[in-house]
Structures are given as structure tokens and as C-alpha cells.
Amino acid sequence: MTVPVDARTLAVEQMGLGDHAFAHYADNEMRWGVLGVFAQLGLARNEKVIVMADPRVPHDEAFEKLFPHGVLETARESGQLQFTSMRELIHPHRSFSAERQMCRLREETQQARFDGYGGLRSIIDMAWVDDLGMDVEGVMHRETHAESLFADRTYAEICTYDRRSFAEETVEAMRVGHPVALLEKPGEFGAFHSDFGLRLVGEADWANQDQWSQAVQAALSRSPADRSLLLDLTPVSFLSVTCAANVLRQVRRASPRQRVEVRCSPFHAEMFRRIGSTAVDTLVLTEAEGAMR
Image 1: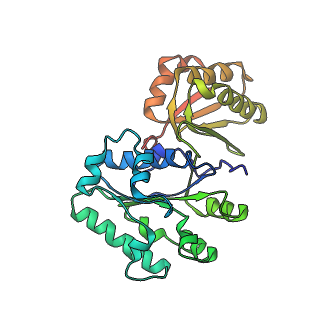
Image 2: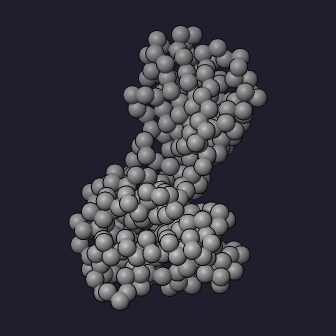
Image 3: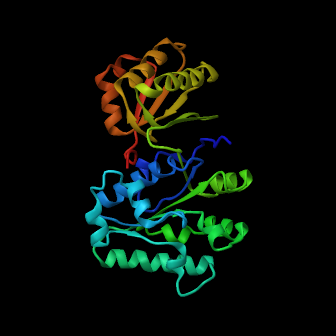
């Protein structure tokens, strides 16, 4: 199964409090990469992190997988990092309800704020659905009706799905139903072509420079010469000089009537200027202040 990239796809590095994200995996080792980055960023930003991993995975093993270097043991000892389960979260109740779960998560968020943390991040492996014998339809309803949890931007959540355990249509419904869908692993790159132009997501470096170049070339080829093309780089978490220079080179080679707007963070805009974007007449830089959260 190929999980599409679309207008809501982000790299995990760009997640912050207030985000509710879908993640997925089909490999027992690969499942930890995105979650580890999410947890480490939260701890570094003085946020509390709660991990509800696959119930079949012991807490100590989950800790080792998320933090293979073990340097964050102090966060676990202090309570900033907590390993639990859906069963423990809803205790003493034995059955799941969306209202009960959301109420408990609000309580945990309020407690985190009271304890001096900036907010709460939670990692929820959806293997708990089978563990508690929950019907998928009820879970899907919760996932698509949880806006109130995130409204004040003090809580963030990743719901991660094992593609081997859930039906393909369920996985796709969950991807579409979440406000944010994450790239499968750190360091990955994705491209989304639309009527408005091209949206590039993730890391653009030597490992995926060919893919990057092909995506930009395809967008330029598809766009009519007399119409402006938008290259949205705001979801790019890392941009190498090589990939930035490739954009300038391809725009320069395009039709002299083809105007290209590059929308990016102020940091990346400065990079483009330093490597000569002002000399490309058909290229316009637009700085997006909210990029690179």
C-alpha cells in the first residue's frame, strides 16, 4: 500500500502543540523513527510527553526504541516522559468511549501545564483498538471529531497505524480524517502536485536531490507558460544549497514568460538570495513567517 502525500502532509519536525497527526508504519523497526523525533522535540521544548505504545511492547523496550542512546533517562525519572497504555489512561473504567478518553487527555494536559510544562504531547499506537476490542467505526468517529482537544494549542497527538493490522480503506480514511498526515519516516521527501502548483515536504538533500529535481521539472512542464506557478516550500524542514540551486537553474531554463513564485521560510529565502535568486527575473520570493515551526 502506498500512502499518498497531499496538501496536509508534514514532516514530523514541523509538528507543534495544537496538531493532531496521522502516522503509519508496516515495519516493526521503522515505526519508532517518527515517534522518537516527536517525543524528543517535545522534551526539548519543555513539554510533557506521554507514550501509549503497542500494548504488546513492554515500556522499557519502547523507551529503548524511541531513545536508542538512552540519554533521556532523566526525563523519564522526573515524570516529564511517561509510558502508559490506553487501559491505564481510562482506568478504572474497562471500556473505551471517546468522551472518556478525551476527558482524561484534557486532565493530563491541564496537569502538565500546572506542573510547569508548556503543554502535553501524546503518542498513541492504535494497536490498543484490538487490545480493548473496540470497533473501528467508533474509533474513526473519535479521530475525526476531536477538534476541541487541540483548540487552545496546549496539546498535540500522533495516532500511528500499523498498515498490516488495519484494512487499507481504514488507513486511508484515517489519513484523510486527520488535520495533519506525517511522512512515514524522518529524512523523507514528498511532493504534491495541484492546480495551484507544487508543494514540497520534508528534507531536500543529497539523498533525494534527483527526486526533488524531477518534481520541480514536472511542475514547470505542466504549468502553462503564461500562468504563474507556485512552488510551496514552507513544509520543507531541511533545504540543501544544492537543491535550492537546482530550483534557480530550472526556473532560469523555463519559458521567459513563466513567472514562478517560491514561497518559503525567511531562512530559506535568505539562502536563495545568497545564491543568486535576484538575478532570475521570473522568480519571486515570498516569505512565510509561519513556516519552519
